[in-house]
Image (cartoon, rainbow, N blue to C red; front, side, top):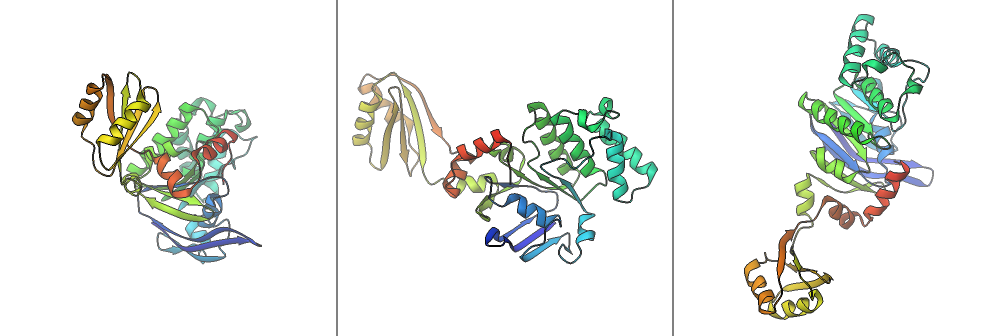
Length: 320
């Protein structure tokens, strides 16, 4: 559905996007994940025809976006990080106006506006001015406006940043529901857990480039070359780390606290021989479990960017 090849965007001496390539399949949910300044929004703006690429190709459903921008835009629903609706107009009129921009006839746009207000649980707010909406309601109406013409591709820039938990959940459910109807979705986010929850594939962006992409399982596999087991015991973790280190070859043992230690090995670690060593030394074992890396761990390792950077940006509500 979307093919991006060697995409580049420069602003004077600044390169915002550098030789970017990826593709999105029909009906897929594809997430661009990265910190402020990674180039996510610049990439989005070129895909939707708002900004002209310095170099590279963008093909949307067989249409060259650079050459036939208007034709491509007719297939896209865009949800910017800041709402593009009118504060003085109510919800119903905002949706009808958006539909009119796509050439929809009055009867059709009013019918679709009512359907979307109902779908997003905004019926009672339909006649209130947009400026009176909460942040969550504003974001939902902005998404409804993007869907008014039934686009093949939905593009969302930070769709859940700065809104309440319930509205975020409803938006995620909506994105998954649209996938079931065949809609292709591209969205940017700071939320690693959100991308992990709903994306078919994810691309990590840093400094204008994609440093890794794939399914969650593929990204996990890219750094998972060892096995880690964490033990919770009744004390003397540092002392037992030394004992275990001397007893098991090819294993690295570290104490995390007085009551916790981890064993790391390229091979899977059998639990029974380890527990026997604990018992020989009078140590009770309360828990022993394999620890798998999270998508956050993968992001940090592949990009070199600490997850705390993303968390700070989420708190500020920023995104680019």
